[in-house]
Length: 118
Image 1: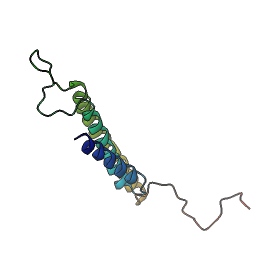
Image 2: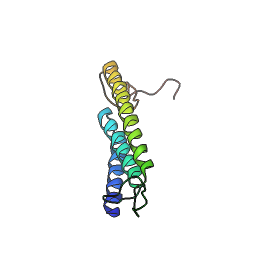
Image 3: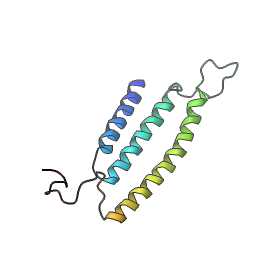
Image 4: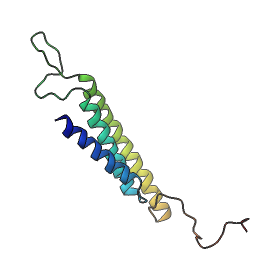
């Protein structure tokens, strides 16, 4: 089970990095979301991968799940939702302002040399 979760985290991270390096706004937003999901799964898995274990330690129980990563993941979900909303609004504003959704800054006159260059 640990190999499956570790593989899922690796695939989410690789796909997120690939999408972040694209030159369009929407894939960059999706890539950041995938990276956020990868971090959330990693935090959740750090609290032990046990099935049917309670997050509270009782006297008669020998196994339990650490509740701190669960609380961190819940907080991270709220923060990532707000961050995604802000990034979408910034991307939408940039698209409406320039009628283009490229992420990089390219000069408009690609064929000419900059001023002061021989």
